[in-house]
Each structure stands twice: as C-alpha cells, then as structure tokens.
Image (cartoon, rainbow, N blue to C red; front, top):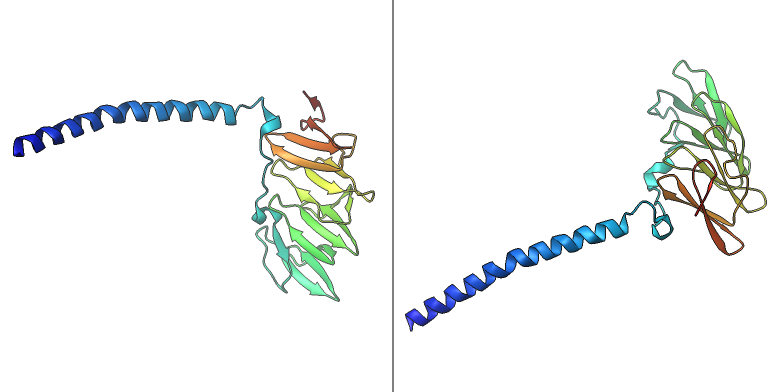
Length: 194
C-alpha cells in the first residue's frame, strides 16, 4: 500500500511540475498580446479618457495667512481673497482663488472664472461661468457663455478654432470633441486625427 501511495504521489508531482511551465508561458504570452492591444498608440479612439486626479485641482486659498508652496500667502479682506507675494505686496484677488499645480491661479470674480499666471497677470480669452480645468499638458478646457466647450493653451489662445458640446482629454496629447452627436479627435496643435 505504501508503494502504491508513493508511486501515486510521484505521478501527481510530475504531472503538476510538467503542466506549470507551459501554463505560465501561455499566460505570459496572453498578457503580452493584451498589452499590445490595449496600449497601441495609434488606436486612440478606444482609449479611456484621461482621469484627472482630484488633487490636481490645486490648493484652495481660504485661510488667513495661509502659506502657499510658491512662497506667497493668503489674506482675507472685505469678503475677498488676496494672494500676496512674500514681500507682502498684493499679487491678485478674487471671490475664490485656487492655486493650480502648474503655479497658475484659477480665480472666481463675481460669477466668472479666470486664469492668472504665476506672476499675477490675467490670461485673457479664458472666461467661464464654471471652473476652468487645467490639464497635465498645461492646456485648459473651459465652458463658454454659449454652453459649449473650448480648449486653450497656456497663453489663452484657442487651439481648435471650434467648440464642442463636450471636450475630453484622452491623454498623450489627444482630445475627443463631441459636436452634434459625433466625435472627432484632435491633437494639441488642433490637427484633426483620422
């Protein structure tokens, strides 16, 4: 009986050992094949949109004497938020201010949102009744007064020359623009992609 159990255990070990490398090799090839399908750079139409990190919205400037990572500080005065340089001089002010990760500021003045550069200069052309989104590539997506969306570069210049019902950043410099129920894809220079 002991011999029978010993032979049976040896057979099970041999079968298990023989099957494992082939199975692992098959899984590795399958994973390798899937990787090429999912991340093929030319196939941007089937990519998932870039998910903006909630932390990427920036730092809300809301406390008296709040120190900011760029060396500036916050002062609250007569219902407005002031951003002051390290010297104490006023840089900018608004009803609500966010320091963006890029060093730019998103500022609400009355019912409109604007973007200011790190030196306190307003980027003209960027006005929205809803918060303006800055992307990891430095571009901005904003909603116009006509409830359509546009993309602007760091200087505030319009990229596409058109607006859409929805604009989503797909990552790797690709934007998906929905207009009248159909989708088109554009690169950062505003070129239509096939």
